[in-house]
Image (cartoon, rainbow, N blue to C red):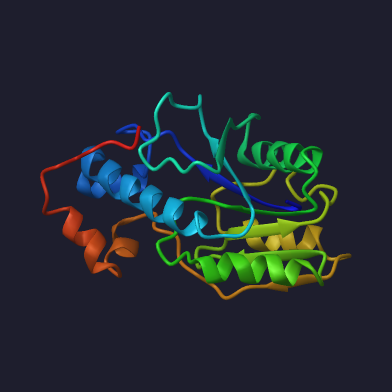
Length: 207
């Protein structure tokens, strides 16, 4: 398999995930929402024709409730998000992958079709990026690691997409359609089934 999908997730612990959302709905409810997003992400990635590598923010849990037999699990390595992503890309290329796409785990609009489109476009372009409405990106696909593309930036800010496109100026880059990450309560309002989670009492866990 020359295609590899990297999925960055946070270890699902109350108070450590969806902190901006938790400020409004509480850390346990925010954890419920995040667990639901993890389940959705796992379902989508399970259908993609690629090696799937899940990268946890901390240690790899002993048990993952959304486990799939063909998923591989690794810890993220690095001091900031850019360094962690760059290291994950390097590991994927070292495993022999030639087309590598990375996504996060907080996009409810994510679909198999979007990821497959990214891989398809990557066959004819140097890089593929999925812009997020908050000024970041929800997906980036590469054949190699361009200089400085994962260098020190204001990760989590609304300048990430623009700065990344500047870094990729010498390359042939194609953009996917813009989508919205779920970071705060206003983002959540667009998804009635996620709002319904707030009316339940079962907090559940993903590990």
